[in-house]
Image (cartoon, one colour):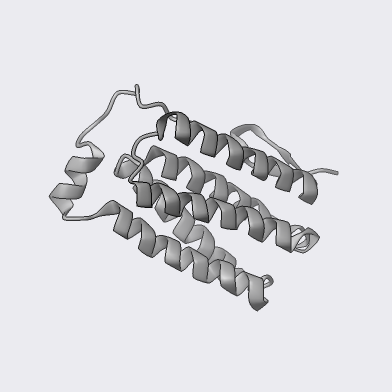
Length: 162
C-alpha cells in the first residue's frame, strides 16, 4: 500500500477536486453503481459475456486511477486488487466456472468497501482503519485464489496452478 509519507507532485486531492468542481465521493458512488450493475449482470446471466467482464474491468481501472488522483489511495489500492482478479479471470474462461459465487462475493466485498470509504470520505491510505480493511480484503482475495487454484505472482497477478 502506498504510504502517505511519499512526496506529492502537483495539487493535492482536495485542491484538485475544488479546481475541477468535482465531489470525488459522488463521482466514486456513480462508478460503484455502474460496477454493481456489472456484478448484477454477472450474477444473473452474464458470467460468460466478455463484454460484461470488459466493462467491469474498465470501470475498476477508472476508479483505481481516479482514487490516486483525488488522494483516495485506499480506493486506488482496493480497485487495483479487484482489477487484478478480473484480469486474471479474463485470461481463463474455466476460472469463471470454478466458483462463481466465491468470485462474486469477493468482488462484492471490495465494492462495498469502496462505497464505505467514499461515504466516510476516508482520504489517503486510511490510516490504521484503512490498513485493517485492506488486510481483510487481501485475505479474502487470497482465499479466492486458493479456491480457484491460482497462485499469487509478483505484482499481485495470478497464475493458474498446474
